[in-house]
Image (tube, rainbow, N blue to C red; front, side):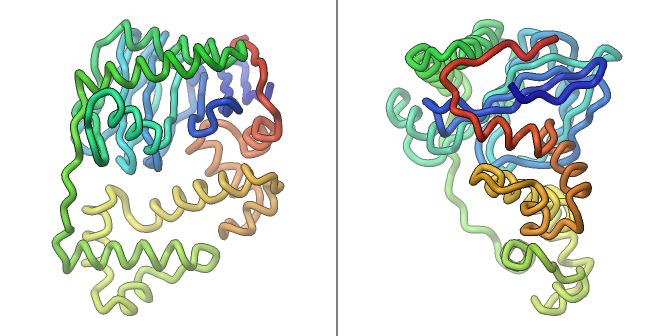
Amino acid sequence: MAEARTTQEWARHWQYAELPDLDLLRARYVRHAFPRHSHEGYVLAAVTSGVEDIGLPGGSLRAGPGTVVMINPEVPHTARAGVAEGWVYATLYPSAQVINDIAADVAGLRGTVRFAEAGVRDPHASRLITEVHRAAEEGNALAADSVLRVLVAGLLDRHGSVLPTRAPHCAGACDAARARAVLEERMERPPTLGALASELGTSPFALLRAFRKRYGMPPHTWLTDARVRRARRILDAGSAPADAAAAVGFTDQPHLNRHFTRIVGVPPGAYRRERARTYKTGGDPSP
């Protein structure tokens, strides 16, 4: 079992082979703070001890035991300890496909679904999140899949809705989308803000404002997040961290290590070791 530990902190970020579209994280963080970032899929988290402070576009959320945190795809957020002893939590990262398939099956919701609230007091759902972890760690695929579906169905019933499809108002929004596409394409050697704005026919400050408004973070922060996402996919395929660092444009492996650990919660080496294993049984990562 690959873990990232200090004298007070531990973390395990992994996948269970029987549920390939679900990532799992169990951790205790005290000093670690997640910078502003977002996820391609959903976040469903249950704090079991301590307090987690989460920064969201609409304000902050203080999550303690019994709280379920629900973050929709591409929503920028931060996280840090809300009390001196930090927080312990179990987190599920289901893909958008997993959530949308369950929504269509049990709730009749067709399209891209969203959770209306970022945090709710729901001890029962919180226990279900920890039960998914326990079943996966014990190699019980039937239980893990069943409890996951019951959990998501209940949360969707109480807090879910379909996200309306809206074409973005052009001008600034379109410039932001075009800038994102350029940064994705030239991730290894991105242009400066001035060069990017000139290429898109706008001004640097106008582009900065438009990008921040659409994606919740400035282009350089978004690019770091995007590089870590791509590095995860490269590590998933079995490449070494040094190769992943070069492929996504980090100057060297230490830069990848620093940003990857801050955003994902474990170092890239520990992350890759977990991906290299075949999960039939698991173990308790706590000290």
